[in-house]
Picture (cartoon, helix red, strand yellow):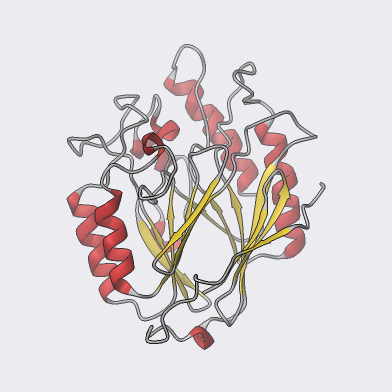
Length: 296
């Protein structure tokens, strides 16, 4: 698999305040794998989406992740798709097949819910057919700590009236985080005194120049909490297949390119993310996924 070696270095003006209480020395070297927007399904190509090929692309990614002996792997949502008949049993078969390949990683695997994960099934269905480690299992939003870094996983798959996405009863352009989850996030942030990475399928940087249709509708409320905390280093996202980057008030917002786009084997997209003891986040991009360095 061809690897991009070009690193996009970020300019000054992204250094955090000297008064920030974060102690980067608390971070031990940490490395994890990332994939997003596989949309795996046994159906024909449409709008440059090669549904069937996602399983082969994932196999390449998992082989690399195992070779590098990473701490864990995260898939950022839209893990599977559905057939033309929107048949739930068929969609669950797609999910079982792609989950089996992801679980070939010799370590912990975490899932982030995307809108297509509920296109013809429920959240409960998705979580019964996938596995997260420990207390994260069976939950759509949760947190975990690895090597001195706290990871907070959000679920923005709720309608404007805050009912959960379920069996296609949603518009993908409208995603919201309900009050109960925001209250949970506030409590999480209050009790964390270590570096934080936030993971979400839909985009939180609504303030940037990205199309608002791919953003969480009440993202400003969430971002306010993240900025007030002072420990959040980055938000890592999927959903927007072409990728995106922005930063504000010391927080990086990096949107990963989708795996499903374009034909295999010429094209693929996956990444290995490293966080060093100084708090530098380095994205090692493979194939179409660009590399990036994000400094505190």
